[in-house]
Image 1 (cartoon, rainbow, N blue to C red):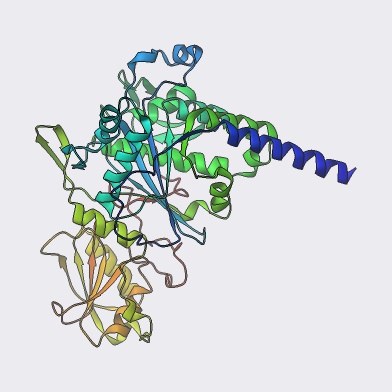
Image 2 (cartoon, rainbow, N blue to C red):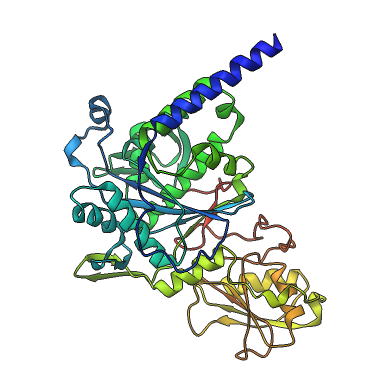
Length: 448
């Protein structure tokens, strides 16, 4: 009986996977020219996930349930996330890009980032592959990273997937009722799926920070969905799993080489605490010939991206010996846009036994958190680095002692030793903002 059961279950799983894989629509998204000169993250994988208002796969019934029509959509990519997957599969970082980021689009000058995909389509007589390639090239130029794979989710993706998993729980700070998105939800906790799930991730009018708040919504929704899908109740229930596979199959396009089974295997050991959501640093809003845009500095974005993948740390600290936290004095400067960050982190450092000297606002803003130190103080810098995972280390003549420069990436001093674990949580974690990020394990508090 056991042997028969194993054969039946494994055979069903194999047939299910083959049906799923053969039904995925493919797009030649990675074939474009203009790649970065070198692949700075080696064997790590970068997966670009985009969402747009494409309604080509929608059924008449689904359109009726959403109260919309087939010809009302757009190819503008209003959701763009770059998923960085380290080769060891132990953690992942999803970097969000505001749709109105004012960037250079090859062959089209400066414009909003979400126009790159339709620009490519229009340049090549309706080719979605050309649209995907131009968007991939634009984001590669902006970040300095090589994009290895591409996944596109259409308008119905959130709708279908949220239905398939039975909805996700959200907690709104204020009741929301807004006609453009169709959202109609009360203040507090609600379980949303279908039409309201789609409205939740699409709303930007009526939110304090517009599209930046919408990005937080999308990160929040994906975190909740990840927790639910990764639970045994979904993955070990063949009926729920079958519905989920069908919903994903109907809503996704992938680049030609991407194997969904191999991709899933990279997530199998990933805990919610190690799925981190970040947003690129921005310089606020501006108005120009493209309309209302989000100002972006490419050099800051590239420094931010390199810091996230761990490519900007100082290798000279590797052989240095740590010292006692109380044996030296360090300064703490706030180069972020978060008020009080220097004081809060200085307090945590004092609790850890460090001697803290100057605590103040930095002269200029920094996109990345950096441990600056003069020559000869590698051991002291390494001692501090053990308590702030992800910070860059930089030897410089501009400081006379170890200096912690806090950046807009939102890194915080932890009470634990982070040299051996990237999953350590900060003692005092601020509420998620457009820059400081969140993890998929974050469930507390409400959202705009």
